[in-house]
Image (cartoon, rainbow, N blue to C red; front, side):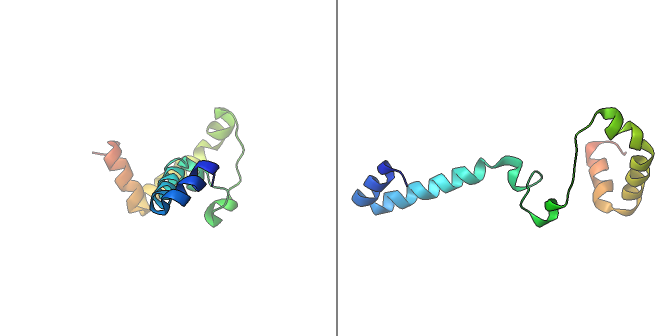
Length: 91
């Protein structure tokens, strides 16, 4: 709590609580991807090792594997099929 917040808490504790709540909401809204796909804290993301590379390294050299996995997801995962339908790639 900074000095202004402390002064407000002395004069009006209820208003100080509302200010703290508003600040917390802003913190949550401003986190962006750091709490989801870019998180380094979530268990599901800790083991995700990555390294940036060129498109040749990332896509071209792995194109066969990527196509096979994409085809498998399309045929066996309704969520993947639905995403393609919604995006307009199918029908």
